[in-house]
Image (cartoon, rainbow, N blue to C red):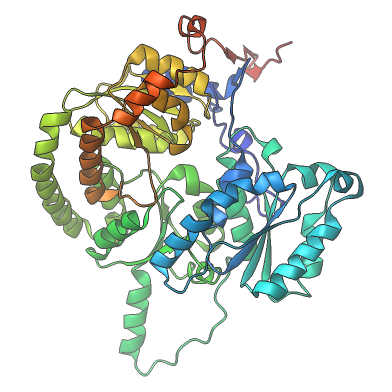
Length: 513
């Protein structure tokens, strides 16, 4: 799997054969995934598309959280406008983890029409030198947008040359949006830069052991170290829940990459297990660390919902031979949670719920809904790959439930919601502007201030679902005064009528003319 000799990570269309267009049922998408090594869902596209995601934007969501770093967005100023919305948020959530942390520091090379003709390398050099002298950061991260890639700016060579003049570590991130239709490739692009520039054994003196017993104790301590790979959708409350659970097993927990400092990635190698919270985010990173540094990993589930959290905890405990301790903890947590959920079940039982967002997360969150007695009527995933398949195991009676794959595509979602008539939506916050006009309550799929994960997350989601269903007057009034922008004719059509499949000829995809 070693892609690190290349400048950039491959697209997920090529590496994972991930899908960006599908309409059918859960049974059909699972059968289709198993039918071919490439996955027949990969051979679908749209005759019409609306509001697709960009990996440049998603890359910034991770990189903006890294502490003591400066972000330089190499491209037109418009490519970085999304960062302005993160200014206060990133400072707030950085300081929750480190009170002395500074806010987000970012620059743009502000490429214009003249730079498209003459090149943007001069502006990039000036920006890097300025950032190093003005802020004195540990690291300067250069995110590369579409324009410099298209005009041929040799960013890697520029940064390699500038490294001799700067104290900060210079990190190129190749996250050009035009290279992939699957915005989750952004996670690979970020980890590619981290693996090449940050990951190395720490340069420090080893302690002189006073006795063999001290040496044994230190070896035991290190053998209990685990890295938990957090993502932008994990809140501080989620991190604290993971720390509580894993420390109950006697493990030492470090969180990376979000809200880490560049130096933290060096010490990330002093661990015995990498624990992914979502295969969609982390497989590129953990597989490289296993291949190069022989560090094992857990990547096959996400701890959202009781069954998924039980499974995740058992997988981690088995690595350390702590199965007995894990079972005792699971029993105690489930007993307490069962009693706490009963009042919410009486209110939420029978309510119809539709989930939209990251594919692993929506299927895992559906397990919470079923635990509460709710009826899951549909899913809309940003994309589809092999990492969602094990998450379906926690669900019951979902073969005939609708499953669609669409990065945004609000025109499809509004058609589906009109047909399914759910009582509540659980959806990605970025797609709720259209969904809110249906006049039904919406629970954000995640939020940086709320707990969704682990055992405590089950209770918190139940509590917030109850609250949303009791009062959603804002959405009701919005639907009455701000109608949906689509014609009635669209609601009479099949919502998947614009998805087209590429036929297979002799085991290969035939090109449609």
